[in-house]
Amino acid sequence: MPDTRHHARVRLLSLLQSSGYRFVTPNTGTIRRMHRRGPPASPTLRDIFGWSLPFPEGALDPDFTESLEAADGLERTQAGLRSRLRCSSVGDLLFLHSAFPTDAADSVFLGPDSYRFANLIEATLMARTPEGPILDIGTGSGVGGLVAGARCPGSAVTLSDPNPAALALAAANAEHAGQTVQLCEARGYDAVCDGFGLILANPPFIAGGSGRVYRDGGDLHGARLSLDWAVEGMTRLRPGGRLLLYTGSPILTGGEDQLGRLLADAAREAGCSLTYQELDPDIFGGELGREAYQDVERIAAVGAVLTRPA
Ligand SMILES: C[S@@+](CC[C@H](N)C(=O)[O-])C[C@H]1O[C@@H](n2cnc3c(N)ncnc32)[C@H](O)[C@@H]1O
Image (cartoon, rainbow, N blue to C red):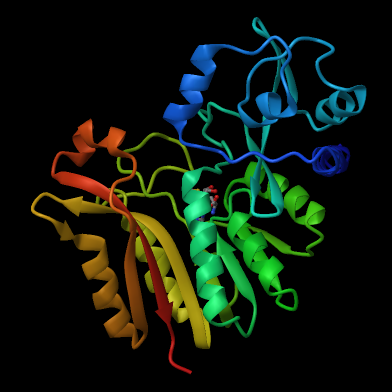
């Protein structure tokens, strides 16, 4: 049964690719606005697989309907049929992930952060390609590992995540991209070995317990997982290896970037060099009204590259 679903997902990706499908996933507010406008009379593939809008019987070609059904991705709602799967393009690659809204605890994330993460990876790899295996920790639908894998065809790529639903979609996305990857169901660095040339991470970084595995970043106003993954990751690098962390840094009232400071301390202690930059000064501003953020003035998207000396 799982194999049937996997093949159906890969087939769905091929059908979308053959149709010239492209869709860039925007933030939640923008998607909500589109839903308030209501579904169009003749929904397109982008309406169905990008915006997650309901659609009437017969709106999809039979090939699509069959693949979606076999992928366990079709549901019947009061508003009509609905795809449980979304598909987004990142560069030339297509990624299946969870339909909007991503309220379920095991939702598979892909959003604007994934695009900033992918851009950071491209820019970092442009400067130097890695020697040695690549690990994408908290891979979700596989964006980090597959973007890097496409740039570094000779490197072994491991995609790791504790969410089996994420790994199932990442497996289909990898196969569609023509990449052979190793999948690892694990939290943090459990079950992965050492000696990576490149570790990629876009961890959950939101404060407070939402119960959603792609979101909750722990204490330090949600920055705990980011810090822990960076600290342990530095010990998992081979000499000359790099760890690339994309995350949200809560900037405390008064302007202190606590995560930036803690990363700098950790890098010094581990004997690694650090480059650190703000990529966007203000993301997830809607979260700041919550209790968990009462002493935070903004959340910045940041990119850190930690390099172990050769
Ligand atoms: C913000 S999402 C990023 C997904 C993907 N890397 C991307 O950029 O699109 C964070 C991911 O981390 C995973 N995750 C959550 N807790 C984790 C843990 N303790 N160890 C490893 N991965 C975890 C989630 O399942 C989710 O897929």
